[in-house]
Length: 474
Image (cartoon, rainbow, N blue to C red):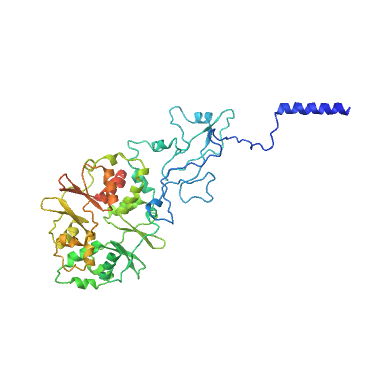
C-alpha cells in the first residue's frame, strides 16, 4: 500500500515538472529584466557623452588653456553622487519598443536620436520613466545623439534656418559667463588714489600691465581705471605748457590729477559682473569704446579680472574647432567689408613723438602704421609704446622721432602683422590670436597700406553682427 502511494506521488511530481519546465540550476545567472541590453552589449549601458556649451571645467593643477574643457567626457553610468555644477546631466539612453516608436512619429519624421542636444538655454531631454507595454516586440535601443554612429548629425538637429550656424558664436558667448574666462591664477595690479602719478606709471611699466583699477579708500570702492591713454592725454595737453610743468604733475596724487587735469575726459567706471555673459562683455567693450573692462563682484566689491578684446577672442578661438563653421568664415575680408579702409591715420619714420600723441588723442586710435616714402608699411607705433617714455624718463623731450623712440623694442620683435583683403575670415582670426596683437594692417601686393582690421571689428562681425547689433556706430 505504501509502495503504491509512493509511486503515485512520484508520478504527480514528474507531471508537475513537465508542465512547468526544468527548474533553474543553482548558480545560474540573475533573471533577465524586461529591458534587456542590446545584443552587442553584455553590461548595463554606459552614460553617453554629451556635447554641451554649458560652461567649462577648471583644473586647479593647471592654468593653461589645455586644461579647459568644454565637454564632459568622463561621466559614468552610475551617475554623480552630487548634482553637477553645470547644466550637463548624466543620463542613460532610453529604450523603446518598435511599435511605440512607429506610433510616436510619422514616416516623414527624421529618426529619433533619444536626446535633443542644444545650448544650455534649451530644456534637458526627458527620458521615458516607464516603457510602453508591448511584450511581443523586440526592444529597440535608440542611440544617443553623441554616440559614434550619430555624432555626425549632431548639429543637423539645430533649428532649421537659412544658415542655422551663422549665429553659433553669438550663442556660444551668451552661454558663457565672464567668470568662465577668469584664469585660475592671474596678476591684478590695483592703485590707491593717494598714490603719486609718477610712481603709478612706473608701477605699470614694472609689472608689464597696461591698466589698473583705482581704489578710493574713503569711498571704499573702485572709482576708475588708470590707463596709458591717461598718460598720453597729460603729455598731449601739458607738454611745453607755460602754465604747468610736466615735473609738477609727477608729484600730484592720482586723485588730484583726476579731479584737476582729467575733468574733460572724466567718465564713471564701466565694469561688469562675473555672472554676466561674455556677449554682454563684448557689447559693453565696443559700445563704450574702451579696451579694458574690470570684472567686479557686486557682493564683495572685489576686482577679479580685467577683460579685453584680445582675451575674449582667444577664448572663443580655443573652441572654434568644436563648433560648426559659419559660411562667412570662408569669405574674404573684401567680401565681408570688415575693417576700416577710409582716411587711415598713419605717420612717417621721422614724425616727432608729440605729433603722434596728438593724432592718438584727436583721431581716437590705438595704433599708427609707420609708412616710408614709397608708401610701404615698415613699422607700427601703438599706445603701449608710449609708456616706455615713462620707463626711460624721456617724456620731457617729445621732439624725438618715432624711429628713435622705437629703439627700445626687443630683438624678438617680429615686425608689423599684416593681412590682405583676399584672405578668409578664419585665417584672419587665427593669425591675430596667434600673434597676440590688437590689430592687423591690411596691405596690397606692394605692401602699401589699405586699411586696419582691429579686434573690435572682428568681435563685432562674429558676435554682435548675427544679433543685428552694430555697437561700433552707436
